[in-house]
Image 1 (cartoon, rainbow, N blue to C red):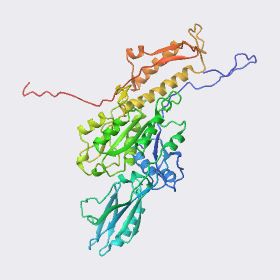
Image 2 (image 1 turned 45 degrees about the vertical axis):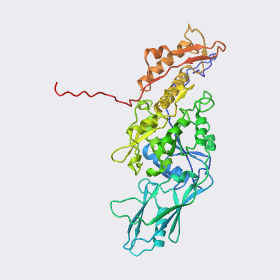
Image 3 (image 1 turned 90 degrees about the horizontal axis):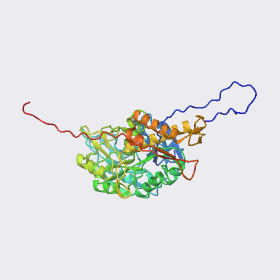
Image 4 (image 1 turned 60 degrees about the horizontal axis):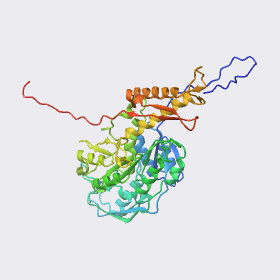
Length: 495
């Protein structure tokens, strides 16, 4: 930095100019991309900081996709900075019908599960189908989980003995929302009572482009999109690419995209291979026949939020660690255990660019391994940027290198030699020393390794054609997550 006290003044003066000596601080913002309701104050295409469930409800509306994504994310990352990005809806909302037969004459309690939330209705002895249908519709519209504060993704209307469930948002997404009559430890009065049908299919695909434009020059290191269709995936990927996107030299904003997709294992693998990129991660859900209770947009928000504190752990090594077996709060395993992904399935998905999760014996959803979709570079196999840890290690390290270079070398002149050791002058040796010291500091923080080989390969040279420019080669040997223990247990009958 340069002192603001002029060198040519004559009048007596005793003064100090004040400037910062530099103090690096990392930030890792998350933004959730989804739909809001007309009751919300956040306009289509807008983005806003959101700190609480009440703010999410104000911004996006009760029962909206964005509110539910926020709730799931906040419960998995209580201190995470979260923003909402409202994506305009598509063209047609899905409508499902629930036709009631004759209720049990003795009455009882009936429970209908919608998106993993249990809606209970008490049936009095002698209630007819129309009475029960009206009570069910009222319970659906009034439902708020007392613990999580989440509402249901449908609104309900009733006509005689038919309850119509209308998705809160337009588009095809609602086809994946689970509605079923659960098996309870006691009797469920709704068992065998309902006939389900789709009276109007959801139609249309939303477009994330307006929200991406609204993100502007603000950094969003974690981007969670509710929309994993090919068109939006391409836009999200291109938004972050190294040539003109957020990872380019012109922006240096970084960031990574996580999106859900629900399909068979074979189709998920095909989708993972279809886009070779280290800027996106596919979070899979099993086909709807599996009985996945939570909607995919809630699932991806919860899972990514669970590891978000690790992405921000550049000061203590957490950014580098293995994330396996972290429990994802509020998520529910598939009802059909055949869809609980076994080791062979998970290994195959990871080899094909798809992140994985697993289920423990208690039915809890656990992180297995989150990866990017990188498969090749210049047409040859490459896994250097496959681990999600790599993305956030690089993000932290580059921000740190840039800050140290700015603290030590901004507003200076470049020379080949500085025999008088003038503070206004810098040499390539000075700059290289900063990079070497920063690499060692990042090693001490558990982000990079600083072997003699790595330090020797750091190069700083003055550009041959532009004397105002220095060119840097900066190798980064990242710390690797400890994913696999492969031991040999040798057994003896006698020693």
